[in-house]
Amino acid sequence: MKAPAIFAAILALLILVLSSAYTVSEIEQVFITQFGRPVGDPINANPERNQAGLHFKLPFIQQVNRIEKRILEWNGPAVDIPTSDKLYISVDSFARWRISDPVVYYKGLHDERSALARLNNIIGGETKNFIAAHNLIEVVRSQKNRKTVRDETLVDANSTIGVLPPIEFGRSKLEQDILAASQPLLAPWGIELLDVRFKRINYKAGVVEKIYSRMSSERKQIAERFRSEGAGEAAKIIGRKERDLLEIQSGAYRKEQEIKGKADAEATSIYSQAYNSSPAAADFYQFVKTLDTYQKSLGKDSTLILTSDSDLFRLFKHMGTPAKGEPAK
Picture 1 (cartoon, rainbow, N blue to C red):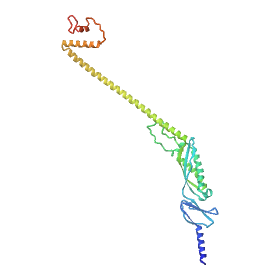
Picture 2 (picture 1 turned 45 degrees about the vertical axis):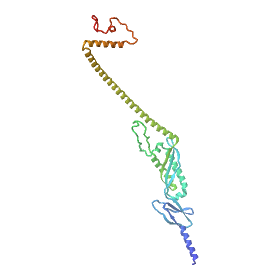
Picture 3 (picture 1 turned 120 degrees about the vertical axis):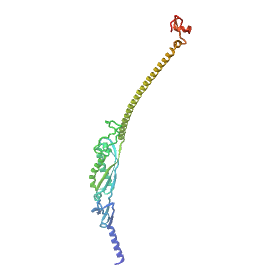
Picture 4 (picture 1 turned 90 degrees about the horizontal axis):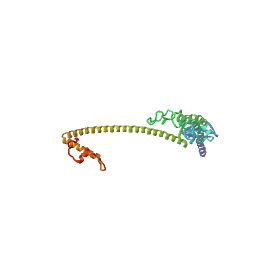
């Protein structure tokens, strides 16, 4: 056999081997199509069995189709949904999914773009259904057994301030329900839905105003309670102050009168002893008292009419002792 023929045979064999051999990565799953129709079982589709490596197919007439094996993400668009209590919210969801049956997936959707559109329709629709069937508090609160921290000093025992309305399910349960409702709808498309979560829940403008109004009302109630308690304490303090002040003033006045009484009694005793020590002292006392009477009763513009035998008039005439026959004063 000539060398060119051998070389041609080797080249043909090499081309035949290369066109029939292919490799499968750990992150992908593969199925073979022959004239556009899938043949055989998918390769590396079972997550519990690793079939990555070198594989073979019929050359030229069979084609290798590679499908993603890893967990994929879905970020749905934010949608405005009315809750059961007629409050509009904007819900932004995300999900994680994988291709469970590459052949069914390829036949029904063919590519990831079509799969994401299908996820938008199914998950978005179920989200709308469950949100619309529950009140806003069910969507906002994560778990029904959650209790808020409540300052008992700020609220009365019968007040609703700081007390959340009771819920039946909670956001976590709604996410599980949406996942359970969406999984059977995606399974016929070769998709396994792994998880669905709410990424963001925003209130619409009207809802925000209502929430802020309620928060403001609660703060005002707490402020009024503080003001009322403060006014009550202020009244008690002022009352105690007035009572203590009256007691202090009364005690001081009583002490003052006691001291003045003792001083007057002592002064009277001293005056009595001094003026009664001799007749001259008694006359001097009478003279001083008479002058004191003049000072208190007579002013610059006073007019005084007296009889000649008046005791007051006597001192205007002379300062001696009373004459005989006159009554001693």
